[in-house]
Image (cartoon, rainbow, N blue to C red; front, side, top):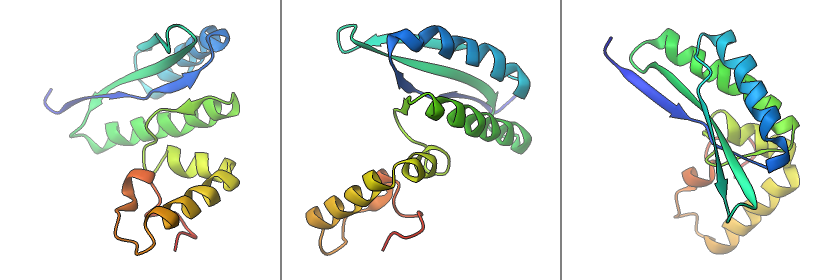
Length: 136
């Protein structure tokens, strides 16, 4: 089938939580029709790790893309409840969830951006601020 896609959803987590991460992937991925494919790797000379559910889907099929987004939202809630952080927040999934849970962090990020960019010429997209409610 044409239109294959892979989404690597990377999370920072402590080593002690690795088994729980794997268990969640094993449990949640099949609920959305995905094979439980995931990867865990050492970072920072073994002090921390990253975990990635690897979602294989059809990028040309809107139903498949919808399942990916639903899976990502459900597991993001679970992972954030554990205190794990997303490596590269997806604009419409992780960023709103993370900023909502840490409003002080978001407020400081807005202030820092204004300090660096008082004229508003820098693109706010890489900070995922350009769509969030309340951003000036």
